[in-house]
Image (tube, rainbow, N blue to C red):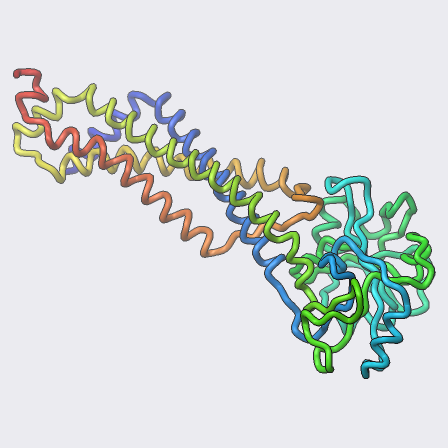
Length: 365
C-alpha cells in the first residue's frame, strides 16, 4: 500500500500545474463559503432578537424602530390616561440619500437610555445628561463601515456630530448613531414630535393593539425584523450561487482525477494483474484528492483572511452592516462539505477504474 501512496503522489506532482489550478479553484469556492456563511450567521443573530420588557407605540406601518415614523406628543397624553406614568420618547430615523450611504439614527432623553438598552463601551465614553449639543455615540458596525473613530466627526443630514464613544450590543443597534432627543428634533425639524414611545410590557396594552388610528403597539425589536427577510433573501441567494460553485468544483475535481486515471489505465491494469484490488485503487484516488483539497483549504483560508474579510469589513446590505461571525458550527459545516468534495472526487474515477477489466485497462480487447 505504501507503494500505491507514493505512486499517487508522484503522478500528481508530475502534473503540478494541474494541482495548482485545482487547488486554486477549490480555495476560491471555500473562501466564498466562509464569507457568505459567517455573514449570514451574523445577520441571523442581528435580526432575530426581540426584547420582552418593552413595548413600542408608534406608526402602524411597522417601521417606527428603523426608518422612523412621526407622532405627536398627544400620544403621550393618551398613554398616561391608560395608566403609563412615564412613556419614554425616542426618535428613529434613516438619514441619508439612499440605503447605500444612509445611517440609522436613534435619539433619546439622556437620562433614560441606559435603562432601555444594555451596551458595552469599546472606547470613549457614553452620553451623559448635561452634555453639550452635537455629540454622538456610534455602534461598532457603524464605526467600522463609516470609519468613525473617537474624536472624528460623523455627518448626520449634513451636520457634523463629534464621536465620543463606540459601543457594541450584538444587535442591529450596532449600526446606529445615538444622539440626544433635542439634537434630533432640531436636526429633523420635528418640534415636540417623536418617532415612538416606549412603555413597560406590564400594563393594559398588548402587542398588536391599536391605540388610535394609525398608531399601534408592537414588541420592542419586532419592527427591526422587517428588514430581516430582505437581508436573508440576499444572503440566501448568494449562498445558492456559492453552493453551485462548490458543485462545479466537485465535478471538475472528479473529472480531472478521472482523466488522470485514464492516462494511467495501463499502469492500473498492471497493478490489478499483480493482485492490487479495490482498496489499493481507493487509496490512490484518496491520496490525490486529499492533496488537492489540502492545498485548496490553505489557499482558501489565505484568500479569506487577507482579501475577503478585510474587504467586507466595509460591506453593508441595504444600508445595514453585519459582522463576521465564524465559529465551530461554521467550521464543522465546512468540514462536512470538504468530505463531500473528497467523496465525489474519489467515487467517480474509482468506480470507472474498478469496473474495468484488466484486459480493457491494458488495451487488449
